[in-house]
Length: 86
Image 1 (cartoon, rainbow, N blue to C red):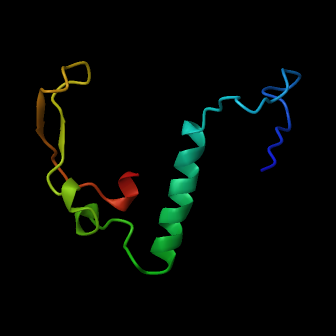
Image 2: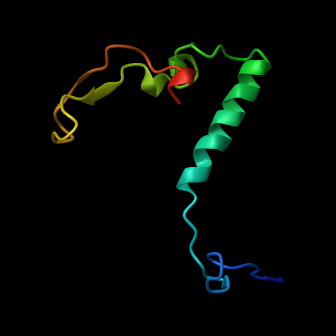
């Protein structure tokens, strides 16, 4: 096996090491959006289609009663989750 670390952790920063950590949370959203739009373009799903057809576990979503409330304080969501929600 050959492993090579290239680049820098920041502009002008330390070099990347084999065990360097990267935050990728921000990059997952555009990738998910592009993949969703590609599936919409193929006609497999509609942009406003509820996702429960493909993900039945999301059929009855619950939301927090208050943004700062405890995680157990939920109520049924007013509307279904759609592809456009992502």
